[in-house]
Image 1: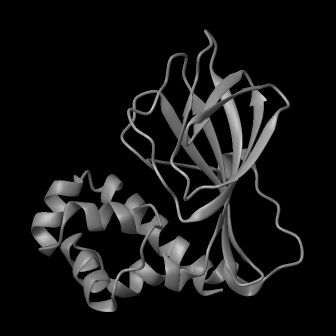
Image 2 (image 1 turned 180 degrees about the vertical axis):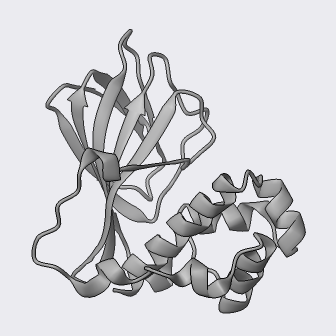
Length: 195
């Protein structure tokens, strides 16, 4: 439940910042915190202290009660969750050209946060460097071709192929094709205390 709330807070912070057209640099300056900390919070890679969160909310000229309205409503652990395509939210996980992320669902399962995401890669889209994530990752190619580098190995995945790996290994996707590629990604995050 806590992880779901943390994911909701991350998403809400990003949505409000973008709706108010406030850049990461500007918010960092206003709140007197680093740009990288805000990015980590918005990407659900770290949980802010209460003091930092309140400072960020106030720096966005947002009422604290309004910010937290509806946070936690999804945490009631319903037996069935239906998400419509219109419910999917675009979010920027990284500033890489040709990458489009959409959050389908963020849910705590057996005490661990799980994030279900769609990633559309435009032709030629390539992350400039390998990254690490404190999670296990499952990738399923819905359409197109994706070249996935994990450590020193590269795997060519085509429509219907999937891969599962420990994302502490350095990794990156690349679309080698001439058509967009679409992947379903499921992040199985480790314990919050370890992130």
